[in-house]
Length: 183
Image: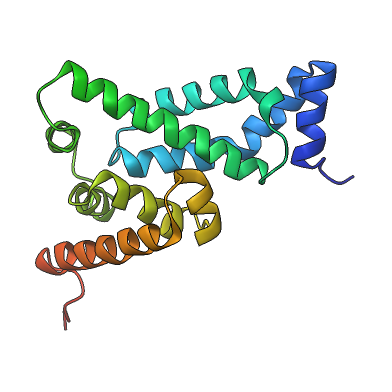
């Protein structure tokens, strides 16, 4: 038996108030959304779980506003993107520190687990918009058109963030021993 489409599941939730259908959507997308947040928060698992939960709560309450103008995954990532930036804005309002500085302090308290932590540290060198574009394009395999839909940025801005982000990541990783011959 084939899996029901996202549109079918959305219709079941909106029309029939089926929590089982919404559970299927959560199961399908929770890993992707959590991974998206893990990369944006540079490895903070607890924060990623909280942000993912907030994303699914908002998606559930706003599901009737989904009109199939884009794919369900694009719509869900847009909510996740907004949840993350709402979180960043609230942190900036309550603290004089830049969010990146707070994230850097938090990640240095965590146990170093090799390459994964190096990737998270390299992501900290990026501006938030660059990190979002890099995460969506390279880590979540989201195409350029969907990134523009999710972020609301023009395509050329997304391309610029990707180019600058990639350059910064390459420089950071090269400076930290990656990309050199180890013969």
